[in-house]
Image 1 (cartoon, helix red, strand yellow):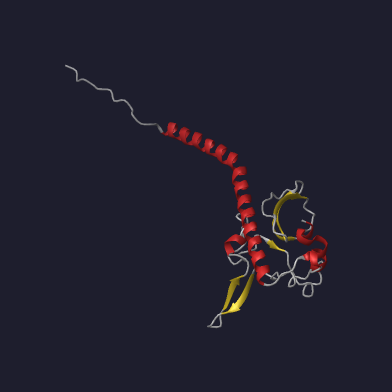
Image 2 (image 1 turned 45 degrees about the vertical axis):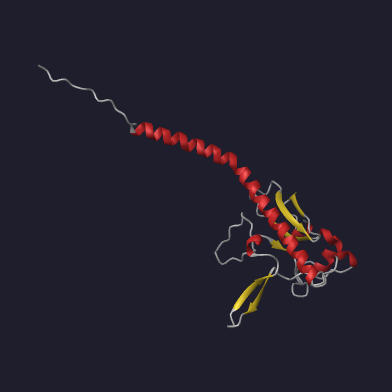
Length: 197
């Protein structure tokens, strides 16, 4: 009598079938991530717009505390407008160590999510441009007083230009906080200086 053989069916996947499934999943994931990239960028732009609005509120409070005048009154120097030269200032603590105090908001709102510093020691507000300077200390720059006198409340005080590809043929997106407190996103050519935002 012959022994009875039971055939064993294969119940798992072969290596080829697993690799095909993984490849299909990776292709679908790539399609989904590519489709969501513009949505993620719009989200980062919304974060920057919100940050600039918060900075605008901090600047309004700072100006009110320091008796800042309106540029419409013929006032155009940064100290007459009630603006600090920098969003943060150094001071000495009781042990004689140099510390930093933030004058306008917190370090988190001064950081663009698209800004990637070259080193961890890069300043926390390097993601946004703060367009206030003392023309006596920086005579090679255009006159701050003249620019504010020309533009008034429309002067671009803080700007973010980190939402762009490096293609110089397409206009760049700049999110601007005006001296008057409103935030605006604009598409500009690459050769436009920040004072003209």
